[in-house]
Length: 175
Image 1 (spheres, rainbow, N blue to C red):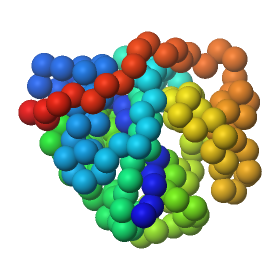
Image 2 (cartoon, one colour; image 1 turned 180 degrees about the horizontal axis):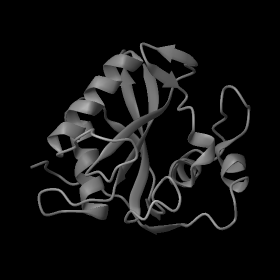
Image 3 (cartoon, rainbow, N blue to C red; image 1 turned 60 degrees about the vertical axis):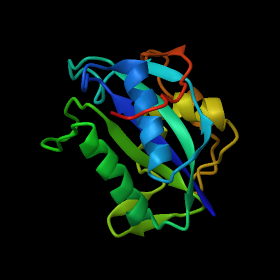
């Protein structure tokens, strides 16, 4: 059975909810899609990417899920279907979004899997990934660089805006 780290992010409301509650509903949707959470980070408020874009801050988390026997493209399709349920529209790169679900790493997979690059090719540059990942898996090692999640987070610029704002508890129902 394959484990995967999934990054969650949102900086727009959907169906009257936003922030922590929206991410909690996304975790419930992962569970309903057959991707049971094994570990949940807290919720982190972070600067929008790219830095200086002028967008509202994001709410981010990382969830380790049991992906079963799914391939990276199958997991990507499951995550994309959840994003669509939450009103995600992919129109432009780095646009504000109601929900963003990214495969950060999946087992020991390295490479291009039908257009899905693993591990996520820019994770080492982004506090919105590394802060929650380091919270639940500080000793996880990037399979190419060998650096831990905690080491990669510590290497980011000191002025990168991110802070933990609370715990992520899965909501019981998805609307």
